[in-house]
Image 1 (cartoon, rainbow over the protein chains, first blue to last red):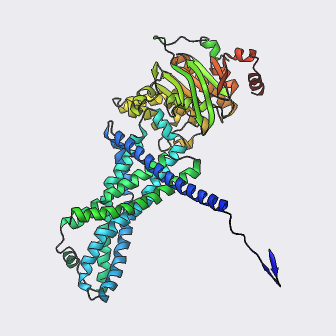
Image 2 (tube, chains in turn cyan, blue):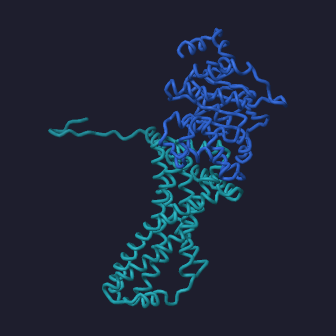
Image 3 (cartoon, chains in turn orange, red):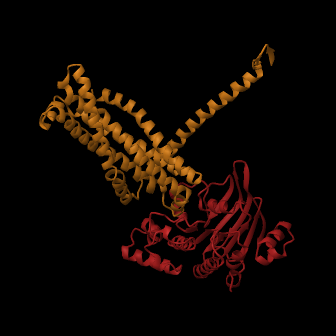
Length: 283
Length: 261
């Protein structure tokens, strides 16, 4: 410290070369740790996936559990997904009407709404809603079973936990996502039309005819069925995070959170690949 | 009150082919650099009950988890009914597990199933040829053996810890196992409930002549239900024998353990 008049000037000495190297070393070690953790997670997920596939394709099959999960994941998610789809339809309708009017393209409104809902918003919103509800539910349920030794008890009873717990849940997610997407799309189109019809009279028949004019199945089926991949991602990650939980109540909370966050993230990233693939395979 | 030492022979005979029901040799297990089991060797024959005692954290429960195959040892071998279980795939291990019963420390009942459904679980998955009425009859019989026949339709959250252990025991006995593993069966119970569980285990052992391993820190319970006791200390078997052998032992740790129990 040196004094200059009435002010105090603090001189900070520059870091020594050794200190710089130590900081750099710590930073590199942290980065390596993060990468290691990332690849380790993927490796364990791969091993888990293999165990589930092996269990799912060998008898005895858990049909009763599969049916129970179809109800739990499908019919119990329907109201939430339908409501979300309906809300999205209204939002797109309001935004599209404003944007298209600006560019003098109001006649394109039905096609804009139909393509936006069915090709993009319907699948993504359904995936994210189900990721939140079902992903968190599966993650928390299996995590709770893990920390209370119920999964160990299943294994000790000579029952394969991958076959009983994971495979039915993952398969139910794969089967139900496309159906839920159809429901979301239907609600989105209905409310989107209704929001438009309140402002400018447009019959539902006209809306459908105009919106689907010139469209083929290739335009709509692939975006709907790609949600089966979303279902695989949600089910797989939620089951994986749940069944590897440690640490009591905190671990259960962490598993539920990780299930939602990771499933949502991978779902969005997978969509980038899937959209490109659909555009190439179904031009 | 009669104890296992009064009822069962001091050392039961091995199985007909000379194999012990459970044979553990030079078993080692580490967790994050901490040695839990340091090369222990034990065996249990049919009709015999071995109590494994020791302080908390000495690897007693880990030993049971290794025997049932929920964890893998770092080295050593485990033979169940003459078969080495190291490296067995899940489904092959399942064939051995069907001949074993395991009572977890906190019973580990499936909380989405009723008491009756919990006990029926092994039948649903391994006795698919059983009719519904046969299965229900067998479940009632098992619950009656453990004194829980009137609680068939209750959920696990509706019954006490001691009652959960009884149901857990009924579930463990469903497939008429040849080997029974019990992890702290009386932990957390009041003295009266503990004595009831001990009597139940003794009665079942007398009737079914299973090879049993009981992990406990309750010396009184161990004296009641076991033919032999093994005392673990720092990953090793400090002493193995009858209760009288432990009392006669000159090993300082053993004397201290008996004094404090």
